[in-house]
Amino acid sequence: MVNVLAHRVARSALAADSSTAPLPDFHGWLDERNRADASRIERIPFASLRGWNFQSGTGNLVHDSGRFFSIEGLDIRMPGRAVDAWTQPILHQPEVGILGIVAKEFHGILHFLMQAKMEPGNCNGLQLSPTVQATRSNYTRVHKGAAVPYVEYFQRLGHYRILADVRQSEQGCWFYRKRNRNIVIEVHEDIEVRDGFRWLTLGQLHQLLAVDDLVNMDSRSVLACLPFPFHGAGTSGAGHHSALVGTDLLSWITEARTRCDPRVERMPLDEVRHWQRSAERISHESGRFFSVIAVDVQAGGREVRSWSQPMIEPHGTGLSALLTRRVDGVLRALVHARAEPGCTDVLELAPTVQCTPANYTHLPAAARPPLLDQVIAAAPERVLFDSVLSEEGGRFYHARNRYLVLDADPDLSHVDLGPDYRWVPVPELIGLIRHSHYLNIEARTLITCLQSLDV
Image (tube, rainbow, N blue to C red; front, top):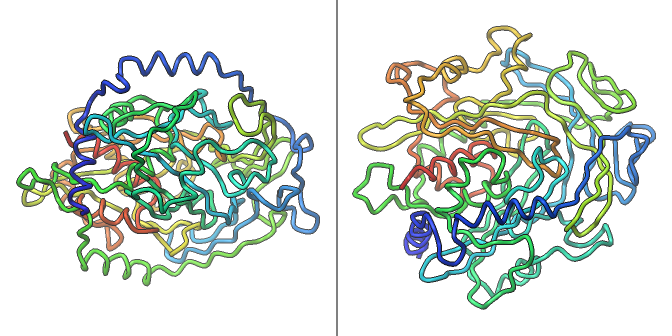
């Protein structure tokens, strides 16, 4: 059954265009949607936030309803690291949201219903999001706004075939134990395509990944959860069974989690050290890392037309790079078992390099991520994928990462990076994504990017 589904996914990935929704028409459609979007986002002082306040006694920034999310403090101890202790603000959003894509077959090819959606943190207006991208507070209408379009399909799952369904994490440096349900369902009946929605094949979506700031983070995460027979693994051409994960890989992850002994405790926001609060931002005294800011939103085409909220604003563009090489004809990727303070289960597999380079200019040389300099200096002929993509625009303001897939220099195969790094066959990584809390959001994005090259 999985093999049949995987080959259907592969056929969609090979469909570079579609008579149902031709790709040449897409950019005109998106431009038209952007011109029609009357949204306005304005940065405001905290005092102008509506429905939010700094809680007495803790200083935590919370919503009056007690729902949505809060900004709290986190006290972190990471023994063995060059910087082994710090405190910071963190987003706490305990409810599990829905990131759902509706799929339907047209002319024998799976298509996916995507939405051109405005988020207040987007740097460029509309981006391609899943069919449904909603927190529990939103789809249960705590905001008293309109219903989330198409959410009913994900509330009666017994009626549809489920192609993927797994809870996945989000940024462990900014979120405390955040997870969302990543789900793809297939429908057979005709459904109305509402304004702002469009069918696309997986092959079309893969092409659009190469466009900066277009396919949003949630879409990349959900697409990564699909079973995908990775032909580039060097097999006979039928592709690997994407669910096969070796016991030795699982044991390595378990050993890494056991070896790592972080101490992470929530704390009042007022007590975080080396962070300063002004009328308009909470920021680190060094001016690095990120700030907490506030925005006012006037939105068109959303369930609620007006609101204000706090957001995380990163300082600088991040870098997430995955090194790949062939071993005995099989494509492998170098992953990092990376502990982040917000991880639910100690650590997850991350890209080879994942950082914001500007954050390391003032730290000891030992704190600089391994292979960062080699990645930055990679020869153009070794770059397989290179695009700047936005992170989640509902909580992060203009958060962008440069995503790179590189053909590793042969000399790096002999570099000993320690027990937290491992060359893993790509099909096994794809298999791990079908289970919760194994690959972080940056690694899932890069797997989706790597799949876009597998044609």
